Image 1 (cartoon, helix red, strand yellow):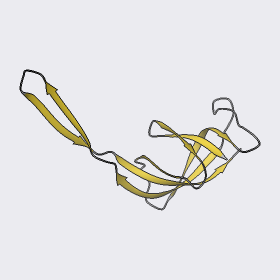
Image 2: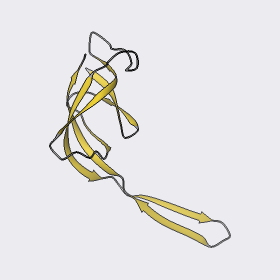
Image 3: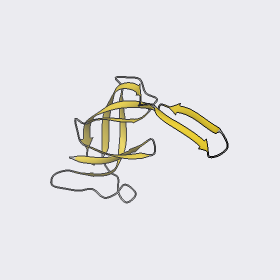
Image 4: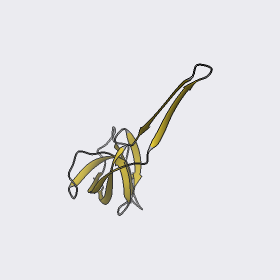
Length: 103
């Protein structure tokens, strides 16, 4: 059984038991969160995309909140002696997919 969920403006292909990192969710660690699947399927049947029919519910548990790797942003203008460097670390939430319930 698998599903496609959307969170943080991105879409993820998930299966039960999978651990993945998504953009930060404002939920405490250890809590459960439910996502509505955009598309889902089991071994024997498939569901339609969400706008046409109600789809599956994906239940996940929040494992922890963390920061991603540092990304260096560097700007330079040639022949002008302009250089500027800054960094960015995205805040992430690690979730474990518990269950996918087809409707």
